[in-house]
Image (cartoon, rainbow, N blue to C red; front, top):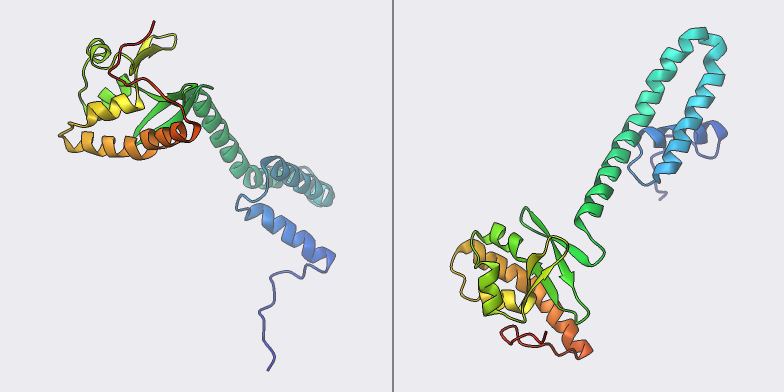
Length: 209
C-alpha cells in the first residue's frame, strides 16, 4: 500500500516554485533568518518587483512598491527596535562585574568578587521585602558581610550574611525572597567556594582593614 502524501504548496524543483516559496518565506518569516539576511532578501524583492512592473504600471509602480516595502519591512523594523531596546536595557542593567537577576517584577545586580562571594544590593532588598535594617546597623551586625561599592557608595550584603539576616523572616514576601535567594544566589555561590576550596571570614567577624 502506497503512502499518499499531500503535495507541497510550491514545487521547489522548479525555478518559479522556488521564487514563490522564497517570497512566501519572507512574508511568513518566523524569525529563523538573521536580521541582515531578512533586510537583504526584502530589498531584493523590492528591486525585482520594480524592474518587472515599472513599464507596466508606470509612475504608479511606486505606490505599489511603497505598499510592498511596508509589508516586507514592518516586522524587520519592529524586531530591530526591540533588539535595540533590549541591548540598551542590558547595557544599563548589567555592569561587567555583576550578573542580572530578577525576582518577581524586581530586577537587580548581584556582584561576584574574587572569592566567589555574591553581593546583593541592600537598597533592592528593602524594596522587595519592605523592610531591612539600615546599612549602618548592618555594618555592626555583619562587619565582614557588608560592603559599600560603586561610585554611589551603596550598601551590599554578602550572600551568607543576607541568608543569616533573612533567617528570622516572618512575612510571606520575605520568606519567598529568602527561599529564592538561597536557591538562585547563595547556594550556587557556596558550592563554587567549596569546589574551589575558598575559605571566607564569617559574616559576623570583624574585617581586616
